[in-house]
Length: 112
Image (cartoon, rainbow, N blue to C red):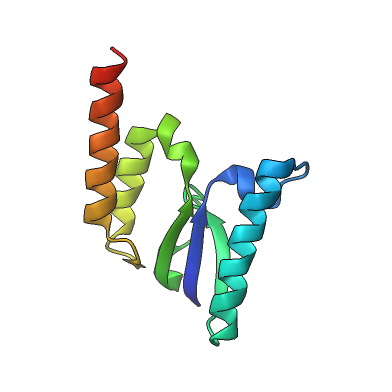
């Protein structure tokens, strides 16, 4: 059982090769994880799309670097809807859904 899962995308879970950008992402994630662990919490980082992870095994999930949602809107919306009843999102599902809907609308209308 975890207290907190830090949500990321597959590119930032144990990458084999890194560059300066990925190094910064990993550093920021590690700083957050260390700060939470220093408070006595059991923490891990997971790809939001990891179908093998049981989301009922964590109390909370915090959105950090889930940036591949941009290319996977529908899959991300479906995951968000399904998972919001299995754990508590630090950033509420409703807020995330509103932000994603806004960006999806903006991209559709601005770049069409």
